[in-house]
Image (tube, rainbow, N blue to C red; front, side, top):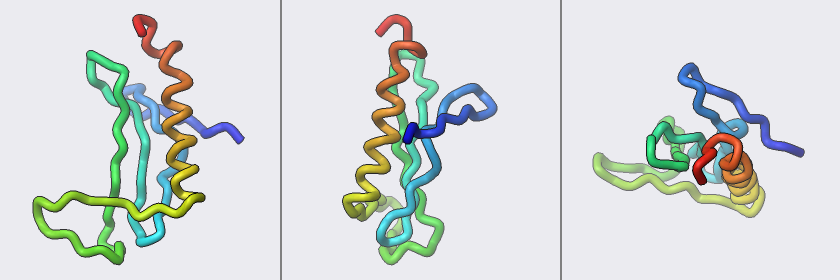
Length: 90
């Protein structure tokens, strides 16, 4: 099934819904506004329900099972697949 692509208020795309991970983090894949692109963001959200406790300045990781990793891969693939139409110079 194709990943739904939505645009934010500035016209940049988010690829699918956030992916909930094994320990409660959520991962989002979305298009960057970087002028020299294409780039995408892989954002990891910890809303305080994660089983992992982070401290200030810590890196945040997402613990993925195969299904979750596949869902994130599919979102990155959706971004990669639309690069030729969104970045004419690539």
